[in-house]
Amino acid sequence: MTIVPVALGDRSYDVMIEAGLLGRAGDHLAPLARGRRMAIVSDENVRPHLATLTTSLSAAGVDSEAIVLAPGEASKSWATLEQLTDQLIALGVERGDHVVALGGGVIGDLVGFACSIVKRGCGFVQVPTTLLAQVDSSVGGKTAINTRAGKNLVGSFHQPALVLIDPEVLDTLPARDLRAGYAEVVKYGLIDDPSFFAWCEANAGALLAGDPAAREHAIAHSVAAKARIVAADERETTGTRALLNLGHTFGHALEVEAGFSDRLLHGEGVAAGMALAFGFSAAQGIAPAEDAERVKAHLRAVGLPDSAAAAGIDADGQALVAHMLHDKKMDAGTLPFLLARGIGQTYLDRSVDLTAVEAFLDAERRS
Ligand SMILES: NC(=O)c1ccc[n+]([C@@H]2O[C@H](COP(=O)([O-])OP(=O)(O)OC[C@H]3O[C@@H](n4cnc5c(N)ncnc54)[C@H](O)[C@@H]3O)[C@@H](O)[C@H]2O)c1
Ligand SMILES: O=C(O)C(=O)C[C@@H](O)[C@H](O)[C@H](O)COP(=O)(O)O
Ligand SMILES: [Zn+2]
Image 1: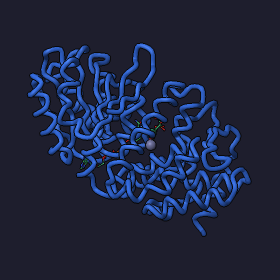
Image 2: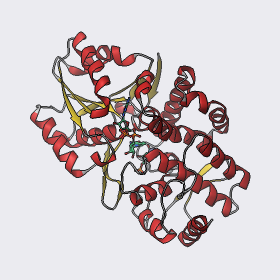
Image 3: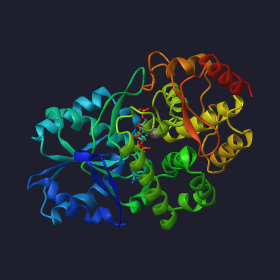
Image 4: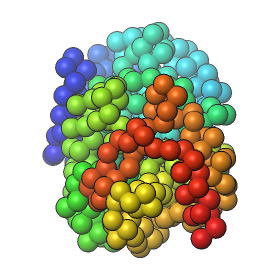
């Protein structure tokens, strides 16, 4: 088993990664159950894994009750949050209990947020079942729902008590969702790890084909990178954690245009967003054009969108920049952007001219 510690003082926890771990999850969850019934929140598509988890819990002497929600980004909403908090309260969840979030990033973000407000905060455990959730969303404690105005605009920081990752659950994940999650893997290479980006170029095929060694390496490497960044800047106050937002200012604007629907998955928006961040950096003379082209070429090679058009979004620069003004990185009326001096050289630029961003997006749209 690989164990990655997330060092956050009295909020520290471990991320355990091991093939087949879901079938043994009960052993790790029993101490958190304190002899009480555990609530598990999941979605319809995850039912086969829910059965494995409940069996493992009962073998460890823990009773459980499942709440199964509708799948998809639309569940990160006020309506589903209200329904879920009512259900958790009806189940008698106490502050000292730990609710299990079994699913992708949607379940993890929603359940984490619900657990941060039910009874003013109860515990939770992340058992991520998508590549995206295993490499990114289950670690770090960002929780949220979407609002009409934008992505993740209402939420909290609420750390899980434990993260259990079983790479084998990815065997049932549809190829499109696997690819979308892969965008967040590539992100770690582009942020500050050029040799990991080179590893991605060489191994993406094997990883996306389900090769266990490639999959486990990508998960463990990504989790370690995320744990390091989160430990350095838990609440995104110094600029370090903002690096994890590479591609997201552009990507979230594309997601708003798509109406948080299956038309554009989060990872697809991030892929297009990273291509745009590199394209803009190159257009401004900050990054070499070859690096921006290399990023786009890799995204295309794995079937991810490398532009707004490839993501199926036809919106002008003004409309996209208007969405960006709701970004949570806004600071005293200016919008800091994640730009890059090259592959593995991402930085937070606080002096980006939004009219230049608009012009760049309009030129891209015409090209
Ligand atoms: N909190 C964070 O730090 C963070 C980081 C990245 C992304 N996110 C959020 O995560 C969300 C995207 O997460 P996602 O890509 O996991 O999407 P998701 O949770 O919608 O899961 C994708 C699809 O896979 C299905 N699924 C999940 N596990 C499965 C399995 N093992 N087998 C078969 N089907 C399975 C789901 O039902 C869904 O249809 C977005 O809302 C994004 O904003 C949060
Ligand atoms: O954990 C982080 O910090 C991230 O930024 C990870 C992102 O991949 C994730 O999509 C996150 O939810 C975006 O954060 P937001 O603050 O822009 O909503
Ligand atoms: Zn993301």
